[in-house]
Amino acid sequence: MSESLVAQVPVGTAEPQERAPTDWRTQSMQRRIRQRYAAERRFRLLGLAAVVMSAGFLAVLLVTMVYNGASGFLQTQVALPVDFARAGLMLDPAQLEGPGADLALAGAGVEPATRAAAIAAYGKDGDKLLSDGAWLSVRAAIKHDPAILKGRSIVWVPAADSIDIAAKRTGTPEDEATVARLKAKTAISTGFNLPFLTSSDSTDPTRAGIWGALKGSIFTMVVTLLIAFPVGVLSALYLEEYAPRNRWTDLIEVSINNLAAVPSIIFGLLGLAVFLGTFGLPRSASIVGGLTLALMTMPVIVIAGRNAIKGVPPSIRDAAFGVGASPVQVVFHHVLPLALPGILTGTIIGMARALGETAPLLMIGMRAFISAPPARLSDPSTVLPVQIFLWSDQIDRGFVEKTSAAIIVLLVFLLAMNGFAIYLRNKFETRW
Image (cartoon, rainbow, N blue to C red):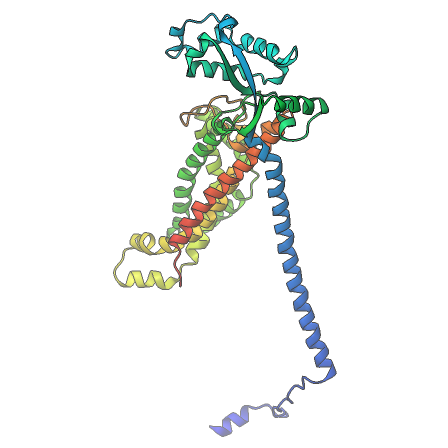
């Protein structure tokens, strides 16, 4: 046996020689070690610089938004003394009862009475101190306490846009002088702007709010999640666990990967053609927006779901089959729970992208002026990104701070939604 092994060795082959141990003390080796350590330090510094730069950009974004938008959560009001007994309001107290109270007050002359009271209290330009919707505060005060119609009362009404900016920030010298005079009379105050969170869009920046857009965003995201998540997860399970490997499944996989990279406005055109043109669904409705965004989000969930399912060890499937589980039980009792954290990660990414989209929603008409929050999924509505886009296009300076404040609300909504999804992901995560 030994002779045959020797015979197989080629003639003239030298016997292997032992390598001499490396001398790390030589000058060349020390230079190589220094170069290696220097390269490692450079790499660490570059990584640290990238992290610091990213954190700096994020800090600049947040500080800028908070600085510009914090004043949007504040509102300046002016004290308006109104002598209702002399105002000559043609109003019967019985008309204040029932749903027709607002119409009765509008026809009774509340708006001209408000302007007259401002001129009487603050001079010939007194009505310019008040916002266009100041008379609505007077109307609300009458509805709250009809007894004030019998005498004189002070009603706090929203200040004009220029006075509001001068009271909270820096305005023109004339406006700042006016604010100083009002402060001397204790006739002006700045407080939390609750109507900004409880009212809908308006042409008057002092009355504009984001509740209508926020409610529309909630409706749209609910529809998107209820459609995209189950369909995306079931599609990923079928393609990964059941579908045969042939040219058709390869074509489907390529198509899904391409759909994930399609520009969002294409999905808007698809929603316009299919949901509005073919099925005749109501224009600018939350259900149409949710269906359109679900089409855009579904490929992301499918891709993330397939990768998460692939990451489940095959031993889990083999063990489940070994104890007699059926293929459906293996998938839904063992594979899916272990893949759920990865699926939720893809869902977070898809829903965050859908929440910030504007282009596909503009294509289906969700850029309309909505003065009342939607009550049903089929009611006309808008969403926060579209509302921000519409306000940013306004000329009035008052909408600048409203735009930044709406961005803050959008970021808070996004963080809350992602935080809940991350909580669910961590809850279902399995440590190996």
